[in-house]
Image (cartoon, rainbow, N blue to C red; front, top):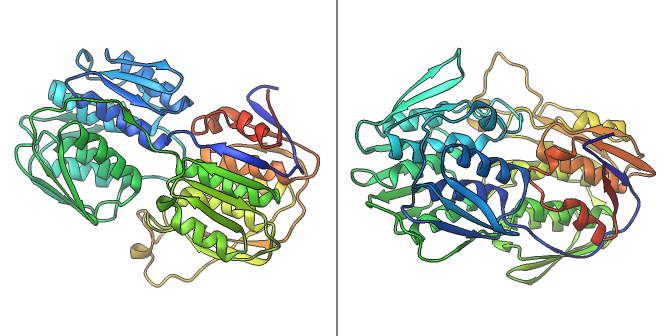
Length: 441
């Protein structure tokens, strides 16, 4: 047996967890570092599979990208020599699509394949491509090779309004706008805090970017220069995973280096179902079991709403709550891959239809009225879960199966450990230090 976690459930998890750096900040900031005309040093970068794959991809393009200490990375893009992104490398990480920005500025043309990453829906990039074109980039897609051919005859200019907010789209258009001809305005942008961290990083290097709600303006600069190491903020998705784990196991876990302002919607729902939550300070939270859990009704939405990445964890939590809970997924159209796996452990989860007046407006993906969707689930609880053999389909679903196995009776096998390790640094050791029984095979 390879690439699996062996987990014995039933133990209370008690102790302290120090969060790693945010995956979704690290990846974007590493790519943004290629825009600098100096070497960039990044601190608190998690040594996870996605980061290592991106560093290898940058090295394949001719740049310098390496860990020089445990969580310190150095990036230098001055010697990039290729403008074609390797298909094999790019297929492993979705963020490879953002390499358009540094490669276009370096070579004025580049070839980037369709992005990889977790398959949690179609995740269409048409809004991103449309935005690139509005700023003056010529881009064509070759369906036979799977590559986008992008060309830039002059510096970007113009403005763009997203039809629906796009996290990756907002970040890529920001990178494309930093060295524009004049002021570029982006409207209806995504509001995730990870985007604000990217802006903070670029402004620290001399960029002139301002956000006013969902409106972002970028005034052109001629270069970016690093003057001091940049520290990556903590991972709010990891915070949610361990917070949920504390309540699930009827334990008591203190989470350090958490930005509590980024977790407000999650904390509100936790308190609503009867979980114990204590804000020790702006960077430390305590989650503890304080009694039986109540059912809930959740719908996902972009920040500041309840994040789509959190709902798989929440589904496991609701298997332990009294009554029927409903989760309605609005952001992606294939986010319930974990349901069949949880059923293997004895979870009672059914797909339900929740009436929506205008689905085209309500859902954040490109809704097709001719297609059948399963966008909501009903969970009955409380339930006693038993062990089983589980298969991971994507990163967040994988973490969910680990959580379920840690409260299940007897032993479970979670196949696909490497998928979980794409986004969680030292997850085995962190769980063990809290008293959980887990081994990597």
